[in-house]
Image (cartoon, rainbow, N blue to C red; front, side, top):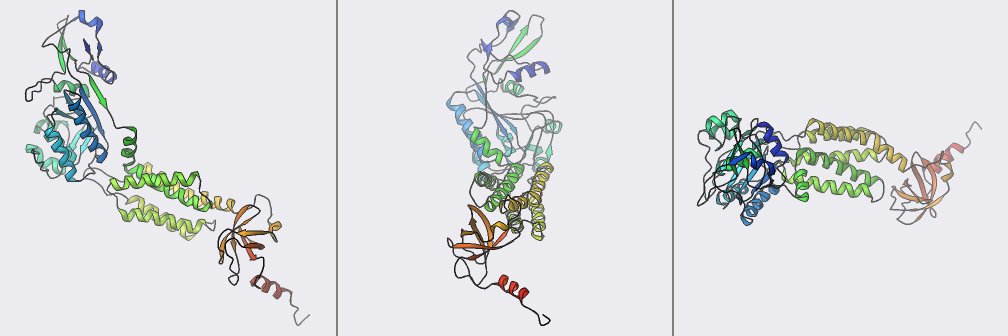
Length: 462
């Protein structure tokens, strides 16, 4: 007989979790030492387990609905939702639709809040009130369910616990005392294996679930063995990516990385890997921001911070606008997300330090150094460039970019002689990392010539 050997005592439970992903196997030597009781369970149908972790977003809601359909189509006995979620980020209508799907499911639905330390907060936690079998691990909590929703085919009723759950949370002891869960033993439901056992004997319309059987050992002791194949399901890789992106620290860091790399790419005067990575990061960050409760005013502050940084980056020296950028980054980071009931949405301190510290390091040290290197010659001294000819990469009026000896430089010309894109230029002088250029033909007598002439005129004393 194919089965998973899982006990309820601590050691047996640990072994059961280790073997939980595998198919039930032949017990072999155990058959001589134990006698089973009850009906024949050799053809027990599978029990599906779906892990629901993170904020309850559109991806998770869709996956739960898919899991219900899959369990029904493939003839599973039941579906267990293993939940650890600190908030719900879909609207009430979407949650109501999910509650209706659970109520109408042809397959019994079990909701287990676990493992230990798990949370089930937000309106999505109202699933506990409409599921067939529910359980909770020790150390887990449930609450902040809000005003009960009104699915068309059922009722959300937590009984005497409703008021406390609406704006607060409770642990195992309180939930047990107030009867929130259908299956909540003194020690709770510590493992998903225990939850599979809790399903055993559940009677529906013309059926009774058979998930475990009682085994009597030779010494007279008993234990429960799982006879149903337990199948574990998770999000696909693509869904997992977008679900992970929709978390505050990931969205926040991707936003800063994306904006920073785009600024970097702008000052490298080309489109390369940094620009591509920055664009992808920004798209993913926006995807997460639209899912989470984002303050768009704070989002705009972070964008403005990058523009402020860019003002000083172009001159290669951190100045006033760098300070403005730092202040805007700190304010935008702190207020980027609105909190959910029972859940602080602000990125963790590690994420904030990494984000703000990384931005400061990049725009105070990294980016100015990059610009100075980008628009400087690798040799010592640049006087050799005076008199060299090149071409205008863009219109210069009075500032722009020129190409001299296959290298691009920031350039400036006299306002009286603007230079059009593609026109030939000649280097007249060098001011730091900026080339002062004139058109090859028709150059005006500019301030440099006037200043030089003034210095060379003889005085009355001479």
